[in-house]
Length: 160
Image (tube, helix red, strand yellow):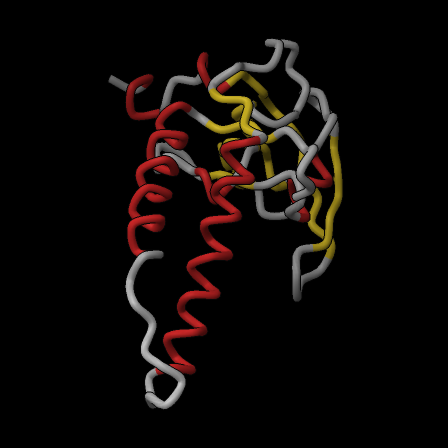
């Protein structure tokens, strides 16, 4: 992700990321053993990973479009809940096109950079796209439905 790329996340995801960031920033103040210690190399690697995660979360939050639903135009884009049909196996799947790292746990999330996300971006209901998943043959998928996240009703609520 570049520093100018806007990303779509839910309000719940923003809250979760802010909490995680606060916790990570508090951990940043933990004392690192001195260079003579056996734990120094391990501790240094952990601090580098911690800093990388802090930077990633700060970048996500700084570029976030929080809960702003895209237009309800049926086009596959970030912030839309998509229902697709895998043509070769006859199965359907519903997922949010967004930032997996900022998932709120309510629905599966695929990024725009994933093979499926890249293929389905810009599709309208009825459009068929193909993509190659890592280590597999070409997969054919048809977009059945696309609604903004805020208008999506989980299947468990619909069936009641």
